[in-house]
Amino acid sequence: MLTLAAVEQGARARGLLLRLRVGGWVGVRGVRVVLARPRPEAAPLLLGELKGWFLPARDGLRLDTMRVQGQDTQAVGPLIWAATFAWALETTPCRTARLLAIRDGDRQHRRLVRYFRRLGFVPLRELGGDPLDLAPRLLWGGAGLLMQADCGEGLRRCERWLRHTAPV
Image (cartoon, rainbow, N blue to C red):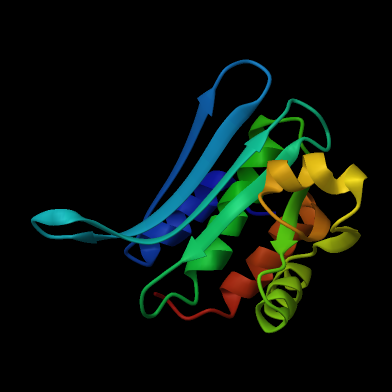
């Protein structure tokens, strides 16, 4: 199985910089994974990032914002996801991750769900207009499909995905 060091090496082999930063206090802590392309005499060009937070618990990883931008970015998402899953397995007690496939529009929502399923996420429940959904909707920032994945399975899927992805 991939390690965080191996994912970082894979990014370097593609000419990219992968950085993972953890912040916050004991209890709830934030995590940010960034992938960038170095540029001579300029700041690195941001290609993608993932933000989230975690609690020191088996099901404590919550992933919030995933963004990929630019051209020739087919390996960016898999590298970021692989780094996130490997880091969680190596340095936290988290073994599952949750996220919200936000429902901004039907077409985009279907694309998100398909993408997250490819990573191993499975649906848990819809967050909608129910009064019991108010707190989770405030936490996640909207309505949508709450999904969960096993970090080990997600990492295995990323490894296969990266083997079939051309260098960036």
